[in-house]
Length: 274
Image (cartoon, rainbow, N blue to C red; front, side, top):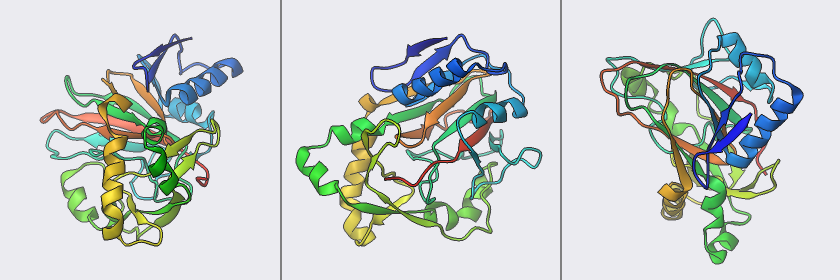
């Protein structure tokens, strides 16, 4: 196994491993460490059945079924991420951290490319450790102890409209989900502090109105997505991304009109942020 970094701040390719085969305990440990070190890791040229993708994901924790998106009838642990040729929009086309409106947001997600367009469709990832570490000492002090309300309102209040232009469908029978999380989160495995807010799901600071919260939140969003904190992954057939949802954001680029794209996502259950 070889770990090849993509940038100095985030992202690495894991080479020389066939995920369709049974992995040794050492290989599993090395992959987990590569994830902790690089925040998002990528595999190339994998040929996986849905069952094999599920088996790989279960090596790293219990699988969490999305509370808001529809999953495959044949494999409920897999969420299809599809754009048909006639679709105008895709999901994930803004900087976000997955499902932070849950009381226990995901540990991470594993996205496998089953059909990709001949061009476009890259995904960006951002380092939330550095987003926090690059703030001024005074602002860090202000943020310590603050909590924020995370909500699925961005999705649930627009479910019908979003579903009309996207093939990946939101469930329209889900009500509002709200959770409170620390603004400065400590990663339970690395012990590092990070900035745990994201634009679509962080609604306001706990105890403040949305109008009062937005000026500072907007500044934090801008700091979190600076180009020097990011990497960009170009998908190929058989590519797979595994990101640590606790300390990253990502952004799916919708720049392939007239082409079909099908990905399979599995999400791993996380813990209550602290």
